[in-house]
Amino acid sequence: MGGSGSGSADYPWHLKTPPLSSAYTMHRDQRDGVDVIVFTVGKTVLLYDARRLDDLHAMLRAHDDWMELGSADEQKPAKDGTVEAWGRPGSNPIGGWYGLKKGLRGRFGMYVPPLMEHLGLAEVEHNARGNRMRSMKGPLVRQPTRRMATRRGQRSCQQPRHGPQCRPRRPRRRTGPPSSLR
Image 1 (cartoon, rainbow, N blue to C red):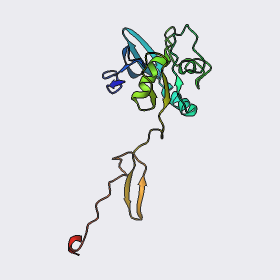
Image 2 (spheres, rainbow, N blue to C red):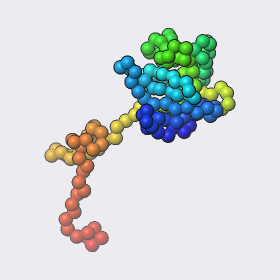
Image 3 (cartoon, rainbow, N blue to C red):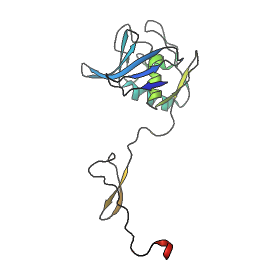
Image 4 (cartoon, rainbow, N blue to C red):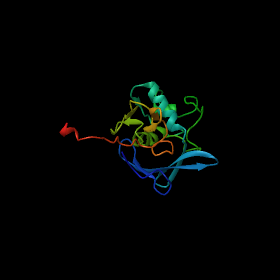
């Protein structure tokens, strides 16, 4: 819930945990050449590998059902079959922790799902306990396409809007009397 801001360090996203009990901010950054998401919860700063957004979205799409969040600290075991367990070593594509600060690598299931929801990648429940999430149905992020006029007719231009090759079609000029007088 929430989510104001652009995700930069100057304008971070303002989010709330799934039970809507705590507020925190997050933004994108680079540390040692690695894209990271920086979470600030009170005075605690957590770092997560930014690849986790695409990896978690792909896993949820493959799972194709609700999945329990199962938030737990790094020192505690995560419940099997939860988003938290998936974000730990051995269960995900990187084969390790997505959290980058030793001692603060847990709570993947608490802080990551609200960002996924804000970005339109997932649906998250907001109950006091036992929250779940699932992938949003439909295609992954798409660029809008424009029609481009060519000498051989019309064809779809796969460039993002307002690209140099994509010019909007000009309206056809009508000749003769208006259709109401024909």
